[in-house]
Image (cartoon, rainbow, N blue to C red; front, side, top):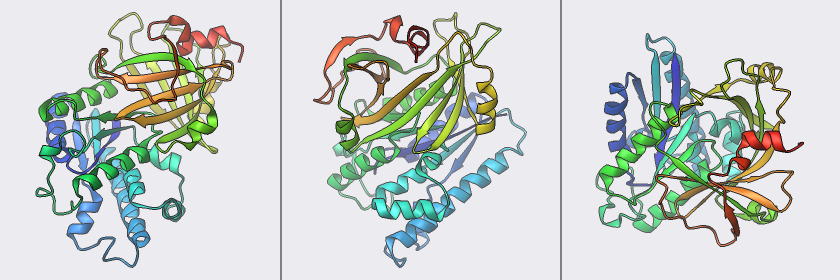
Length: 364
């Protein structure tokens, strides 16, 4: 069984409800059993449980997060009993959405209440797709009439949209779907992103890569929508000739683990296949490390700027440079860089800067 759990999130009036219908139709046609977990906040508010009816906002956030996690666990448990080869669990918002409605102190108390940490909670989802609110770029379509739980003004919706992106920033597969196109094309872009993530077709997403002047770490740590992640990547021996690697990813002593394999390295339309590992599986696979390859260690800063998601990698062996990656819908998309970014050269097609090449070039 292939079981994937994704989050569809976004600011107010972003198109999530419509997106659920599109996802259902598209992925059932691809052979998936699609399961939907409804938005817990809307269920609670319609039932009379809300931040303004509970004792405090913290009281409300604790019960909402507990119910949300329990629903997800039960859906996963039920899914594993089903006679299906491919199951896609779609969460209408995930637990990290709640962070946007709390102070840092409240969020820390919620994490303590459910006995987890931010990395484990955030990265318990396989992928996150953020639909940008109509209040940012499609203001004429912004409305509160189609959702009784929505009360935000256009300006409030913009602020909340930014907070939601910031809450998820740092996830290994976060994609932001903006309003650069009309709504129907926006839905097609979402489906293409999900299909690419699931390995159902040639990747829709392209990426440009730049060598930039190494920025000051203190500057990066001070940015609002920026999350630091520590990554260790190890290449494995592969008798079939396929590129196989495992990755440890996280921060502050909390990590998640992945294994990635290229389905067909000789095919220019190759699709990466990735699966989650538990810690024991990861440690076991470490024993199969390719002795000819060095382990890659890097600090990644995940940040959002102007509805664009950036990944900035700092390597210990590059003292004056850093690598900036920019996921795009298409190669000619306009990129607005943060002012502090000083580009040295574009290295999108430079084979010297792939992780595989770096693992052979430098003694780490």
